[in-house]
Length: 113
Length: 109
Image 1: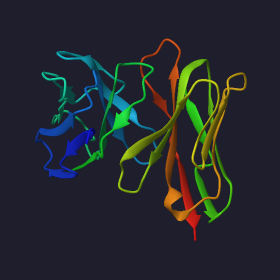
Image 2: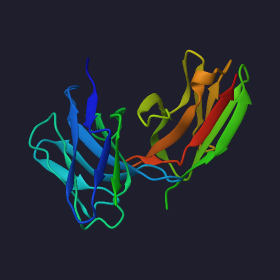
Image 3: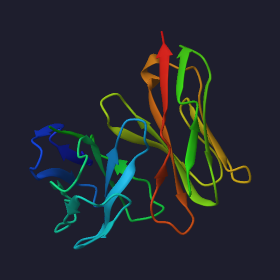
Image 4: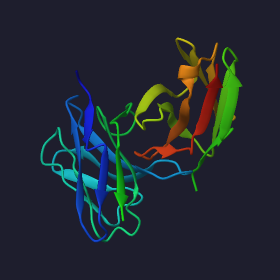
């Protein structure tokens, strides 16, 4: 079945550690996105990529890094520089950027203590 | 600042009731999306529309471009419709989506 997978579902880390969240899609989509969701707030865009080997910062990129070495994969690293990393992280993809429907993964809940 | 406002924030209804969730935005858009987020956290896209009305099963989405307003209706609501419904818009000239904070719907059997 085609879709987007994120792993793990739950992730726990100690403060000061970098952590990488996985996102894989087999939909043959060009564009991929990372969002952060906090209670009472709308989803906020961290990074997006419209093509392999290229990505752009979203609204809250500070403390995060990404790579897009393969079309299928868009991993997100939460670095120790991110001041409030505990959140629910959602990955999405679309056929192309802009006006196409986005398909979301199941999300990863990251807790940093 | 381009924003998306949803109302109500929370809605509890009895099974079978007709449900309406509202979304308003501030300036011209290219498209509006309605999304559904279940308790587990995964998000499903319900509709993407730029004008008029779309229907899928018991769900209907409408948009009024002049009034900058969209509604999501659920007919014959069922407990399995309980979820958070999120409105998102793509403002003209912007590649990114702007999301509302969501409406938490609870349908009581």
